[in-house]
Length: 202
Image (cartoon, rainbow, N blue to C red):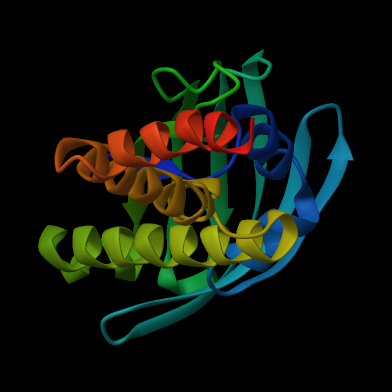
């Protein structure tokens, strides 16, 4: 099975990197995950419940991180045993990059996450057929990112783009209004009145 995807996140590259390296965050966001614990250098012990079609299984396994380039990405290798349901093993690469212009102070914070997954399954799960397995993998990925984005919003607040747009809108409106008033002569008239006022007093 192969899968690749791209997600736009409303947090900075550094915030995304920290979250993707935090076992507690991953445990919260991976569907069916009961355990995600650091057991050694860049090695984690994982337990999760999986349901693909009629087959339900509890997988125990490990995840190892390699090719770590903070805060740009890493490669992870995983393997898990699900008893009679079978096994799963494979690898995934995760790449983070800031959105174009996000480095500028005025630009909203944000980054893009690209991921690829290559996995191999055996046992009962392998007999379910590729379409069912692919569908379950895609749905798990979608569910993970929904949970991840919700977790990031609760931690860092909503993406700044929406707040910035509402803050900018009144200023833009005022600019348009004053431009319009000058166009129809109201702005000029006020200027004349202002300059005439001192003359009346003398």
